[in-house]
Length: 115
Length: 116
Figure 1 (cartoon, rainbow over the protein chains, first blue to last red):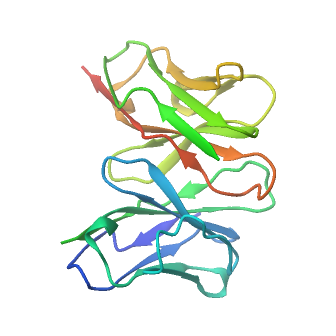
Figure 2: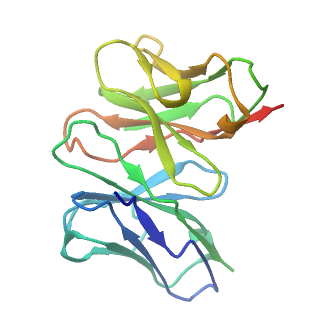
Figure 3: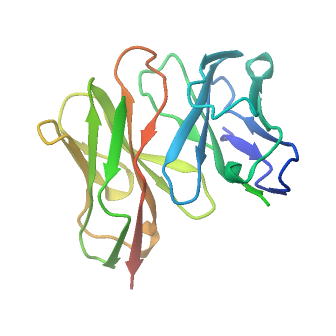
């Protein structure tokens, strides 16, 4: 079984540009999460999809961030326009809904650097 | 709201020595507790979890953790570490009930470095 994959692994962009991060969850996982770790800080929750619906987007920093999950499969996180403080590692995770284990499976992350 | 504090940002230890990584949490509601590990250039991997039952939980790679409700702690231990245990370790909680598959709240992480 393939794990959670994220693309790209690294992205370097200039302030004001747009970047789109992609996450492919484990097949059959209805729950998909985005997290972010800014350098020196803890990993913080951004949002949670159940299938294609946003269950909780309380962690999204501002309206420059837009997350979508097409057809309940892969998800994209777009940052437009990017600011310096958006630099960090963006993690995606997925989990099943019908197993009471609460385990989230994480991807390797996308390291975003805004210069 | 929940918060998690990992009391040590870095823990150096020699190979075959015991290690304890400390984690305290604060929450107004009951939580489930987790330890994740991140090896270099990899995603986070679940080490162990406490959902209910015995307060001593065993995980992968010889790690174990003990839930202490009165002290709101969930410290991670291993009696004898290996070089391959060098990684960053994260303590995390999820609120019980409500949206049960919801967000993890993480501590700041502890970098464990095992020296030969």
